[in-house]
Length: 512
Image (cartoon, rainbow, N blue to C red):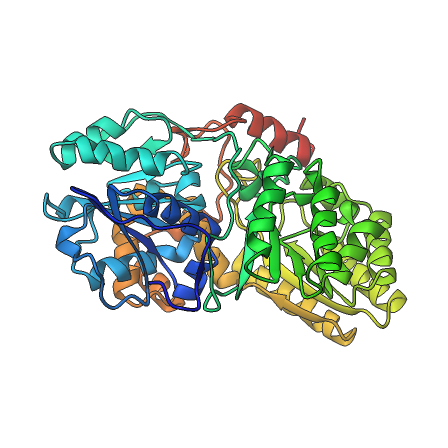
């Protein structure tokens, strides 16, 4: 709902005549919803149409303008594996049955899109009437148009089941992922002080990543790398900076944009000539993209810390995961950052990667020690996660390392870095275990998901639900899967395909 502090960068249209009633639901707080670029943009597209009555809701929504019985379509953003808990919470709150088989003609058609269900919708098939697989900018509006012309729910589902990028579990078939040619800039349509990134104009300048780390879902499901036209980006930036002082550039591989420096310079020039309060931040920056020019601009525009993903401590392991960075490159990046006004550095790493040995952990600690010793005044910290096998990546066949082993590694790393005066945060191996179960799960998990929700969604709820239903969670999380086994998500067609992923797996792990 709009408040007087919100700044709209578009004009919502008044509904005229018969309209389709749509809920766009975000399985999280309003603050996170307002900072979710994809969710907000898709909502904006519908709100700009006079034939659609749309309402944005989230886990904090207690009552709605559109009554649940009048909702035609309810779309959910699905970004994280555990989002199903909040999806069920929203459905329950408005007395909408969780399972599609229990919903009749007088209940909404419930669908989902986002990286989780794009990668593997199988565990969630019982709860959604259909899924958008891949980019949703065009499909989101298309399904609303088809719904408006359909006689009933089943005829609607039957019609959309033949569209590329849409998966209807009731009408199973091979589904080709939706991949849009990007021309229109996607940016924050509502600048709000209530957003998690308060009063910040976020703009996507590229989608996908050509580096293709072996574990990286975000890279593979968004291939090919696509860059927005520079002029379109500059025009959108001018629009956003006309309303706020804070801007953030979004993209998995920002520096791959051919006009990345030009875009940064444009913002810097506006800072110098029009508004000295302008601040800029980047979602990420590759180590080999840290240049004196870019670092100086970032420093001048208020960014005091930069985040670099090194992923692993040893060059050997970085090559295994296709993160081809040398120690020399890492130190060169830190040196440039320190010399050009950056005050702190956060390094991202991962433990439990395929082929990881004790020496790789020691080299990660040694890397931190060398940086800390050489750059004593630098504020250095580490963020570490544990490896979770993800669909559509070369490492999807690798099982996850034992949780107890990962806990020992994470405790050891935290202890050793603490001795060096370096703060380290490590993701929970126990939670990451269940993420792996969901990531590689299949349609047999529907009862499990529902029971986890009913038990409260805690770690204990997952463990107890699996025990009660006799679910072999280790089967999904720990097992090395043979290349010739049919995977729960094999009915989805992605580029590059499964044959390429097998070759890449063998190349990276030295099995060729």
